[in-house]
Length: 385
Ligand code: FDA
Figure 1: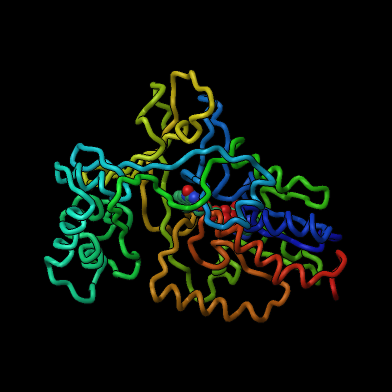
Figure 2 (figure 1 turned 180 degrees about the horizontal axis):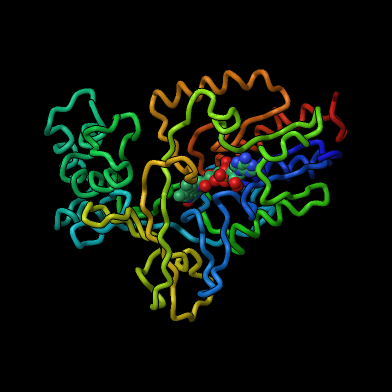
């Protein structure tokens, strides 16, 4: 890596944004390493050869944000469609709209409710068990939406996600559950939303196509770190516990397994994501990717779907969602304590900071990191040292 000013480890949205900014704004020579054979991290998408449908190999990714800065930035590299995400859930052989809204409540209780009537009903159910400070996830959920809606839509799904009875899960792992007393059924309520017209792969290709950037795919940083020249800045977006060889132990993650199938029908479920709330179905949801791009002409007779199963990550699994128990947080803090001794390494992204981030948050954090930590180290394209 001689001649490179900046080594970016990981080509997800965090690393790619840093690389793009540094190459374009500062004219730095940037090496981008990824241990995978494609760039784009978990947001990567590619066309499935058998069906011609664009798939998201790490699970459905919908772009949404309230940040004008992030939206304007990303629009330099892609056009967005006007896709609006909606999610449905199967419970007891019936289909309901998610997150819980007035439509869900009317269908579930089988009658018409005005917003005031629905609110009064949910308020009554919320107070029915007299729960004070919730002692576990179940109590927190019942306190925020009442038992009937909890039992139908949250209990089984949560159990499948965590492989644990919600009574045994800490209350802190969920926020307050949302209930909408309108018929608004859009999943996200952000100002900006859409799917990249040419897919996520094209965004990354556009961001990374700069003569100052060189890609090293299929390259694990830990196999080559001794070749990084002294004084080069490293932006590391891999797992922080791995960086320190798991010295204090491993951080806890949940992972998902996707079971892929090419179904012999042009339309398997009529929508992009269908949740399954009940425990008699082992998976949590089914993704059908063709529905993410309704604007694309489709006359195929096959569709590609993925059933999603959720479980605790073991060694070697892809880390997806941080579990973040108090013990995990302590462990993370101990690793952060070690980073002060390494002024030439910046830890970023979801793995480097042990935090769930949506794509817009990863990009927003990278733009800030570039302005506050990367750019000040360089002057006129040359390292200050
Ligand atoms: P990301 O994980 O993308 O990239 C890290 C990269 O570092 C990887 O490519 C990895 O191979 C590489 N790497 C790690 N260690 C390395 C090493 N030692 N050497 C070399 N390379 C190394 N967000 C959203 O906005 N809308 C959505 O709908 C979804 N949906 C969604 C579904 C699922 C199932 C998940 C798990 C996540 C989402 N997300 C999402 C979140 C989205 O995936 C997330 O915001 C981005 O992946 C974050 O980008 P990063 O660059 O931080 O990590």
